[in-house]
Structures are given as C-alpha cells and as structure tokens.
Image (cartoon, rainbow, N blue to C red; front, top):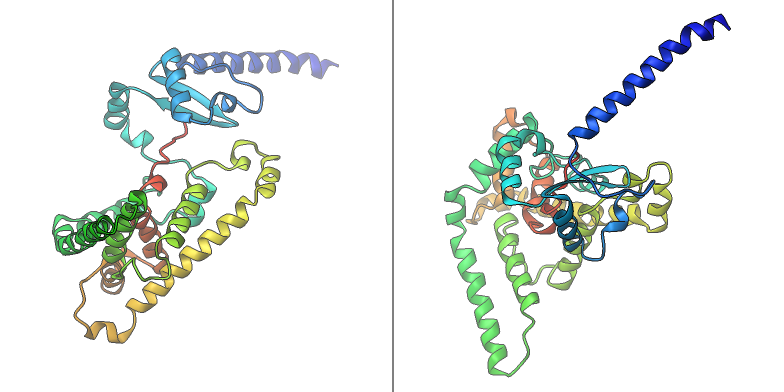
Length: 310
C-alpha cells in the first residue's frame, strides 16, 4: 500500500508529461483530415487518389498529413511548398519509405532510385551519373534512337498505306522498349522473347508490386491475412524470378568470351561489368547490376512512388 502511494505520484507525473509532449508534437504537425480507427484516412482516397488529394488539399492546405493505416504521409500540393521541401529539406525527404515490393525487386535497395541516402547511394549515383547517363554516353546512343524512331515512322506509314488501324500506345511502348533494351542490354526489343505484350505485362506486374503499400505495412498483425488472400507475395516472387532470370541470362551473354572479339556498341551491362572487374573499391556485384538495370528499364511508375514518412 505504501509502495503504491509512493509510486502513484511518479506515474501520474510521467503520464502528464507524456500527454504534454504529445500536445506539443501535434501542434507542430501539419493539418490533417479526421481519421478513422485502424483505417486512418484510407476511406477518403477514392478511385482517383490524385483528385481526392487535390480536394483535401483545397480544404486543409498545401501541406497536409494523412494516415494510411499506420503509415504517416505528408502531402505537398503547391509549388512553393515543394520548392521548400526539395531545396531546404532535401536530406530529410530524399529517402523513400522501405516497402516490401521495392526491397525485393531491388535486391535489398542496391539501386539508386529506392536506396536510402547513404554512402552506398552516393557511390551508385556516381557510377550512374559519370558512366551510364553522362552526356557522352547519351550521345553515343543517338544512332539507336534514330533507327528506332525511323522504324516507328515506317511502321505507321505502312499501316496508313494499307488503311490499317494503329494502336499508338502499343507503338510508343515498343519504341521505348526498343531504345531502352538496346542501350541497357545491347539487344533489340523486337524479336526477343519479351516482345510487345509479354514484356508489357511484366512491366505492369512490376509496377503493381512496387508502386504501393502492402496490407501488412498498413495494418500490422492482421494485414498479412489480406496479403495472403490477394496472393501478393506469390505475385511478387513470380515477378522477381522472371526479372532475375532475364537479367542473369543477359549478363551471362555479355560474359561469353566470344563477345569480346565482336565489335559491338558498349551498353550499360558492359560498362558495369568493366567497373566490377577493374575497380575493386566500388564493390559492385551482379546484384548491384541487376538492381540498376531494373530502374533503367522501368522508368515510369516504378519511380513515381515518392511517398515519404513524416
């Protein structure tokens, strides 16, 4: 009894101090729409999330805090706020949240786009900027862009001559795929086993497992049940296996002795394999190469997931 009377004031003091610190923290947080237990603000995101976010930002301001389940999310909706975030708070906001899909497909964040800001990120960025995406390297691939664009125009011209309909979305996807394939792999997109629809399906499958949160990330303890019912992890493993097999086959082709005897245009894999052989300080491995290839070959929605923890 005496022990309880002694400890009770101390516990009460600690509780009041905790409540006060939470009140101070809440005053520093951006405005937020009303939240539901467990769901947070998920119920306020409709079929078109970007329109829902615009409507909410009109009411709660250009800097707004949302909760997707347990995940806090800061939404920036004005040019001035975005400029302040990217210029004055770059180091605080440059790392993306660690998500299941990106962790798996990037070999535990060995790429540049999804890797958190660190010494490893700076090293990979240096390789990409100086070796892969430099002005000199870009200019060396000019003939590829010209050839593939000419092929596209000729294809549309032939369809026009025969009064055949043209699916421009498919044509543009094939154009992008051909250019990227030849720059990264030294292979033509057309005629490969991942031609047109098959490769497009793989791209969309990769986007779907990389571009969002899993139920377990939003709802701990029970979310894994939803992921199991939706077969998320099975789909993730399938996509990872297909991409890994594709990358490994192409890397193996580049390692064949007869390739060194051929006069071929040096592509991204050639450059990174040379760095792996010659520069021991870079610690570049085959998994690093595959992770960089993932980002260089899926440049649209896989890079659009810019949500950051608040």
